Length: 563
Ligand code: GLC
Ligand code: CA
Image 1 (tube, helix red, strand yellow):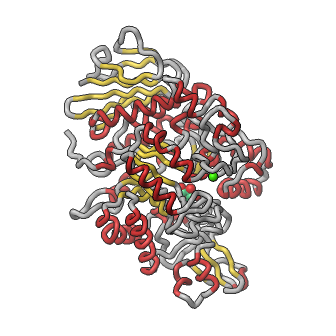
Image 2 (tube, helix red, strand yellow; image 1 turned 90 degrees about the horizontal axis):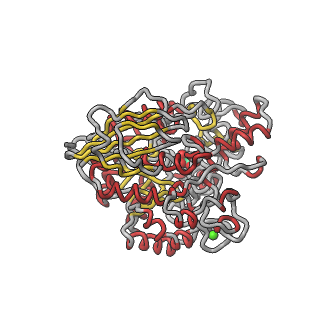
Image 3 (spheres, helix red, strand yellow; image 1 turned 120 degrees about the horizontal axis):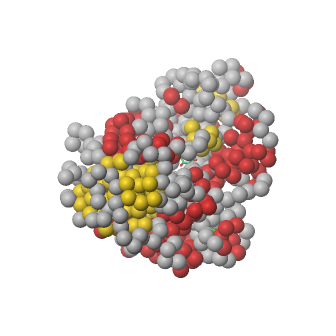
């Protein structure tokens, strides 16, 4: 028996929309809210209970909305507040919640606060940001040795002021000074604005970065990207700021929160998401990154061979540590990573591996998030030239490796595997020019495989990945075992199988996932009898007679239940 307190956000599953590439309703090549409105039934039919929108706000798009120029408005490319309200009402009518992205570590350099901080240095806005004198005058040496995550040095010089401003991400993303109470008042006002409008919660962008070490000391010198991060990751004041937002705004409105948390460990996460002293936790959920590092080191670009053991260890430690104490946010894709089938699965066995990966994470304990296109098994695109890429983060890596002699051609090959832009190709709706996304030139190339991989084809094929996702989400809804059950891993040291069981009020579930095409012998773990269980999922036709062991097919997944 578990002592988990039920909550709607524990039972929900969420669909993430990256608006620019989801659906283009007015046919100008850019996804928008008209498109979302048309697709609400499609989203609902997937069986999700909420939509999280990546930023919809006005933005000069140096980081496609993650550089926000106006927190209380909608980007004209996507629509306006009236249209947003229609989408919100449409989602609510269908029983789906709406979660907004909240990007408060930084604003856009076009935001009026930043413009005033620069143009009117005597005004209160100057202290909304980290403006500092350099170590030498005239822009010859910045205040410290920090390097940004997206664009060279973390400091940008302004000649008129003879001061630098801090940007942990791109130059167009100046960091807000959250230690300034006025900035925190602004944040609370943003939260209230959207909650008053009726949204249900927030996904809080790089929330563990919002406090910077006092005195802004130099960082550990060796890191080539993000140098100094030990002085801006999960510092104690982050919790004070979140406490303030929670107590003063989120709790009174009942607003849900999921924080993006680079560098998070289960132990530290409990300080944020476990209720303490009878108060609301600081956040409901956290997106950690540990299971997204099974084929890389720190960033997708520093690739390592895929390690199933590393993947299992990450998942299992969060499952174990959160049980009864916190709650997991489950995801394997979002707008910041290449497509999962290319990473942890196999494009050659796209359907089998796509289904296996879906069951592997959705049947764990936690709230599942599904990223647009993931539900039809979209894969990475292959681009021919560097100038077809668009993302500031991709170019940052290029500028770095170029210095070490990497040629453009080789880098394009690397980016074709590692760039986060694979998640940003337009959703493939049907076998029509541009995958049915638009007739105009799309803002970003559509993957050429759209004639095979598209929503219409997936709808028509009862064995598609899409129908598999729908069935999994439906099964999760119907079985509290999947939501509230305990978790146990089996055969931990296997290099090709990930097997775990769930248990709740006398019911049990066994999930067996094969990583790879090589056949392996699977024997039911002690205490489980496959011949007595019901096979509830399988990405191959079920065997004519169940036996207590079997030899796996490529990327095979089987799920058994005992009631
Ligand atoms: C988060 C977002 C990412 C963005 C970055 C800076 O990691 O998910 O897309 O580029 O923050 O805002
Ligand atoms: Ca459009």
